[in-house]
Image 1 (cartoon, rainbow, N blue to C red):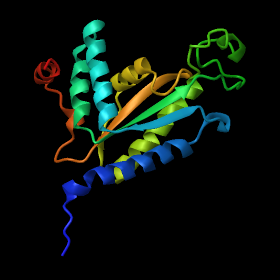
Image 2: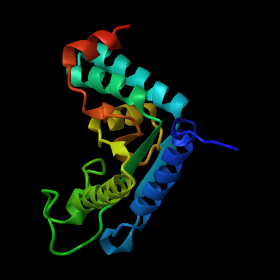
Image 3: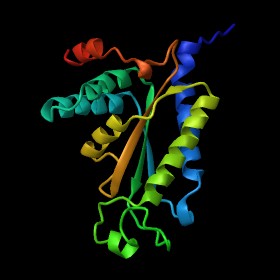
Image 4: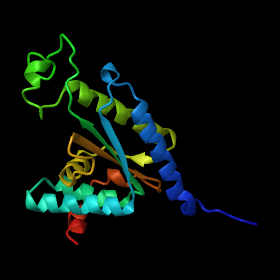
Amino acid sequence: MNIYYEQDLREESIFAVAREMMTAARTAPKAKGVDNLVVALLKKDGIAAVSDTLKTMARRDKLPDFFLRDAVNILSAQALVLFGTKIMSMGLHPCGMCGFADCAEKNKHPKHPCVLNTGDLGIAMGSAASVAMDHRVDNRIMYTVGQAALEMRLLGEEVRIVYGMPLSASGKNPFMDRDKDALVKLAGQ
């Protein structure tokens, strides 16, 4: 008789959910039907590299302790999904929600985000998080992980905004650990 324990199948299950999350992000509604998203999956080696980058950034740039905290937290993930967007004006009129009078004015500042791109990114991440929730996979949307991914240029030169969503299936959600002193100490090791 073959017996399969959950812990032996966990990683395979997480990757299956991550693939569904990526599909949910891709099919989420986009402004004017224009898709500027870039979505990628990292496994353990990629997660470790992002963690190392977060630690380096925190020390080098004297960033807040939560960068170190998240560097430690993500090491408990079986997978990490990255969500990014390219910046492209959508040409809607009237708009001006970016703070400029219109898209022509905004386009003089190509690194300044179009709110429709960032809105699309948020909707896509919400769709992906709902898939994780439906499968009871622990997750957390992390700005810090996106900052490391940007520094590493993991999603390419055109992507200007990135967030990360680590995934875990364990007895408790490791991404909600907020014992800052213990995590900062761990990050120093």
